[in-house]
View 1 (cartoon, rainbow, N blue to C red):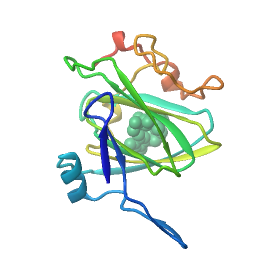
View 2 (tube, rainbow, N blue to C red):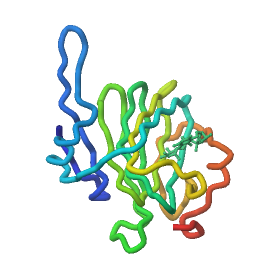
View 3 (cartoon, rainbow, N blue to C red):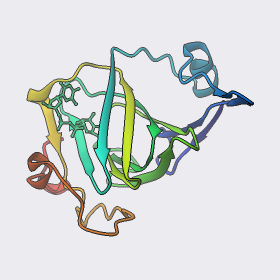
Length: 179
Ligand SMILES: Cc1cn([C@H]2C[C@H](O)[C@@H](COP(=O)(O)OP(=O)(O)O[C@H]3O[C@H](C)C(=O)[C@H](O)[C@H]3O)O2)c(=O)[nH]c1=O
């Protein structure tokens, strides 16, 4: 597998080795030893999530103020534009974002360390989004930052206003957020 730092250096783009043949393909979507070797990270996951969203849905930007979750994210059907935002006080990349297209065709994954905000926009007709987390869901500690916060300036590839949950419609700007 290839591991490439993004412009937020500890957000990693992971490209697994895909074995194709006349039947289709195979790849290891997670291998602890390979991940530790290539990314230098000894990570264990406690939760595996799967969400399905229609085109134009934008989920995020979410984080947990307690029990922050590291996330290993991927798309098994469709295509999304996946974004991580550095909201770690004191980080040299505080307030910066990185975006990557994840799809069933490119098999790409992103490792997003604990402490960052995360979200994605669905570009295909529908998208199945799978991700592992390093800590449990803690709704009482979950917070949201506005997808369109001008101080962050994410260049979402939007062709129309996004479809948002009510929670995400009410999300705060980073400058007003509890981090
Ligand atoms: C995240 C989560 C949700 N839920 C329940 C709570 C709600 O009844 C329902 C939908 O939750 P929500 O609207 O918060 O789902 P998303 O908008 O996809 O939230 C996720 O969106 C962005 C992309 C993230 O990175 C986070 O993992 C997460 O915040 O699933 C659970 O039972 N367990 C969970 O771990």
